[in-house]
Amino acid sequence: MTTLIVSLPLELSGAATTFAYVLTADGVGITQHAQVPAALLPTPTGANKELVAVIPIQALSWHRVELPRGLLGKNFFQDGSTARLRAVLDGLLEERTLDEPGQLHFALEPAPQPDAPVWVAACNRDWLNAALQLLEQAGRPAGRIVPEFAPDARGETLQVIGATPHAQLVKIDAKGVTLLPLTSAAVALVAWPQASPVLAEPGAAEFAEQLLKRPVAIEQASQRWLAAAQSGWDLAQFDLLSNRRTRTWRRLGDAWRAGLHSPRWRAARWAVLTLLVTQVLGLNAWAWKDNASLRSKQDAVREALTSSFPGVKTVVDAPLQMAREVAALRRASGALGARDLESMLSALGSVTPPGKSFATIEFTGDELKGTGLALSPAELTSVTALLRQRGYALRAEGDRLSMRPAMNSTSPLAARWARLAERERRLVLMALAVVAVAALWWLGLAPALGSLRNAETRHRVIDAQLQQMQALQAQAKTLQAQPKLSYDDALRALESSVKQGLGPTARLQVAGERATVTLKGVSADALAQWLTQSRVNARAAPTEARLVRNAAVSGPTPSASAATWDGSVVMTLPTR
Image (cartoon, rainbow, N blue to C red; front, side, top):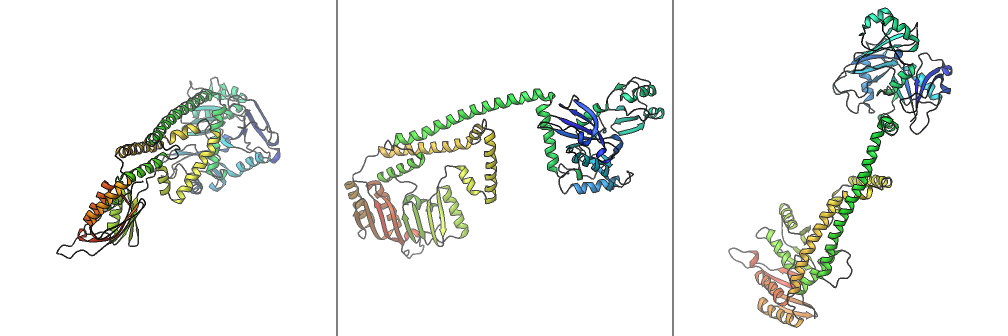
């Protein structure tokens, strides 16, 4: 870290103007100091180089002001707020300054407290811009501007600057900065305590000791400028600050340079490095343990499938394959499942308002369709919500309703992504892109953090899959334990159930493992009993149905159960 500290001269004479400077490599010791024209100033070197301009005390005036309440928010230097703040300062300082406010450059103290008095530094704007322009033309732009002296609430300081006979007395305290000529009258006015120290430049030290009647400590001007550069002040505000971003990056750069190179931060650097290494090792160990737990659960999911169905040799999606195998086993054994006609009709009947039913019913695969169920919008919303709780999805298409088992997403993240708006999706994708770029620079932490960040969701997903697999496994064992029914026995049982349950008007046609039952004028109760009887005795499950309701029998209290049904039902028999 190389810092060039330049004191701005009070008198400017173009390219011939000379600047006093101090060069430091660490912010503590002085490497070089001299007074040369701007073109001969040394150039700071290194990645963290900086040029600090020091405004002499003679060019500054200090003012304590109270700003309007709420004006000093945390973003008061943002574009748009700067003009308002400048206008307020012009009004407050118009009667306090000798020059017109428009000819002055103002700067506030660092980190001013809202709704509290603040210090404002003022200097001639044209002089400051001209001095900075000379540095710019010489290729030495100032990165920061600091005052040579600033009010200090931590204590009082008395210094003698310059050389005899033009030496000056500077008093610094919480009340401001006072500049007086070094005379006996000024010494009497200051009334400096005898025990308090006094600093003086070598050219005025002897004269200061005579007037103050005490010894003084020697402090070179270069040492004073070095201390000023270490302060938190930065007078590059308002028109000298292009925007808030420049100021923020400048402060961050100063803090970064100090943290990387300052000797006083050496212990902190080692502590941070040790902490980072420990975190990298700890996070990777934690991620490895969590991944091992997830792998064991995934192995248990696959084991539940292969142990229940040894014929499955390749496992791609264990929960989906398990559900398909159990569904096939359920159909073969005649067991009732959530995707069967009877279950869907039962679920729909339990939530439908009394006195309302379908006029026509169609069932194919695992989808039930019907017409004639006249539901109001409020009733439709209620029925849809109740069916969703039972695991079914209901969709209205005009006067036709379609019902099928709800698709359970195995990924909560996918469901949440589907609910996001397009703008939110773009923001998420941008954030993911930033994370991806950062991961290239942070290879030690990215894998572990990514694993741990999604660990909770992954555990929930795999636990839900494992519970589902265990339930399907228990169901599969129960179905596998049932005695098998031959094709001939099942056909005879189905023929018997048709004659007994549906009456002489029913007709049975068999084509291989597919049996079509045509019925006419069958009551709802008789139809329900026959479906149950054929499933239990013949292991026959309906795969398709097309039913039409006839007019209800006339009576004092007609009901849906009194109506009769015509149509056909396609049953699947056990394999030969």
